[in-house]
Image 1 (cartoon, rainbow, N blue to C red):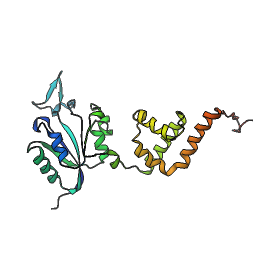
Image 2: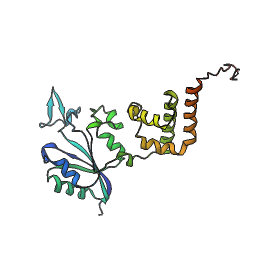
Image 3: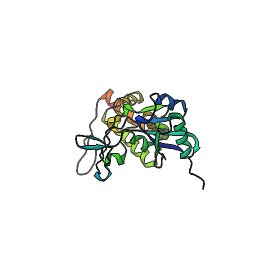
Image 4: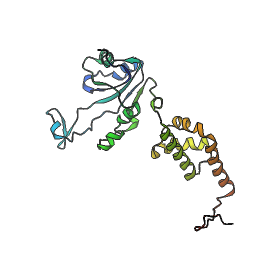
Length: 232
């Protein structure tokens, strides 16, 4: 039977089974790769899965220390092909659980730090995004796909931010996203631009409204609560 082929894969690396220069060796493969922070705080809450070689700290059992890796092949290949390539590069015992990414690269990327939906629901330990290692120009923005509803929600969020924080132009919006984007769960400006591009007229109206208020002051509107009419 023909084996399934794909371009997006994930696998585990165990620190004790890889060479000291494993990062450089991975980079020489020449494909985009993302490596998680080292996972050394993955607690085993299910006692039935405890085994003698678990890491035990303060009476709690933890999974064997490991890295999660996302691997983007240049062309569709099999799981066996990826496994053999990593083994040739890092050693026969280096890689485990090579799998095709079945959901989305974006979801798998979030799992690198346990920020994916399922990891959050299971209250898994959260790791730092700054410790993710990106090789060969891995760019998560390339693999994020938004449906119509996602785009509408993002557009509404951006319009709310412009209104709430008195953002008057694209330069101010870029600075805001760079400084505070994570606080509002915003993606990169590259993704935001792809959504706003189709709504430049609307965004211009929001920017202009902020500019007018800065120049002439805020004009509060008096509305009759019973009729809804605007009062002079």
